[in-house]
Image (cartoon, rainbow, N blue to C red):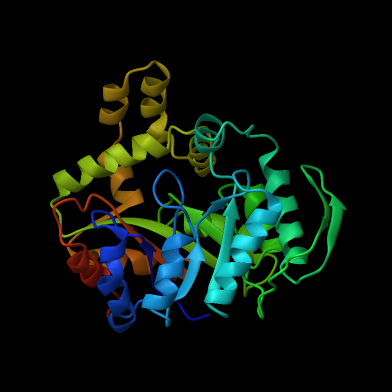
Amino acid sequence: MTTRWGITIPLEGVALPDQRAIIEGMPDLGYTDAWSAEANGTDAFTPLALASVWAPELRLGTAIVPVYTRGPATLAMSAATMAAAAPGRFCLGVGTSSNVIVERWNSIPFEEPYKKVRDTVRFLRSALTGEKVKAEYDTFGVQGFTLGAVPDQAPPLFVAALRQGMLKLAGREADGAIINWLSAEDVRTVAPYVRQYGEDKEIVARIFAIPDTDAETARGIGRWAISAYLNVPVYRAFHEWLGREELNPMWKAWEEGDRKGALAAIPDSVVDELIVHGPAEYCRERIRAYADNGVTTPVIAPIGTSGKDPAAVVRALAPRD
């Protein structure tokens, strides 16, 4: 399977309308994909809609849309609209998100996450073909919904997955998996759970990168990102499953309310595993290592780019032959 090369949009540090020139130039730099994210910034669909016009050569994907924060019918309509705007070039990635985003920020119970994703994927498989859906799933019911604007080509469905259950679900019922917050070496652990259902299953990986930055500064940025994410229960459980015992002191300090201590307890080695940083050439080598270990689409997420030219960062991380 040919390795693609993606980047996360929108980019940090530049207003969304001002990103047009950068996104327009991505295909010429060798990028094949642009994938959005949705947490507390932009929504998942609007940046992709703009990119579909600005760079019609790019494949576009959501990584991810939470299955809790939109109703099933609304999610199907959003996906169908993007699929119509970018025929054959849109992929819908869905996932649980986290209890922080779902419960604390959206006041929605974070219940039965595995079943919720499974049921949503099954509903979308039917709904995006234009089929009338009247079904009672374990986590919701749909009574007589028919999509009014059916895309000519239903988008591939991806499941954001961390541990075994969701990885298997991605392989068994979706077209592939989206993985996140792991090292290149960790890919060897997670990929077989997806690929047991077909070697053609895609694996998209979101990879955090800080190019052309000295190690001390990059590790400082990386520690903040790691402490923000890997103390969230779903990510902690993921890294416990991966056997990353080096994070035990961070988790202990965090539980005790010692945020500064938690930050300081993150070893350099863990930052270096989870955050790609260093000279741009080295960053590209580390990103290729993800592909060598089973990722079909590395999706770079530049972080800590404040004060840097986003266009220069995009150029630095572009693939080289």
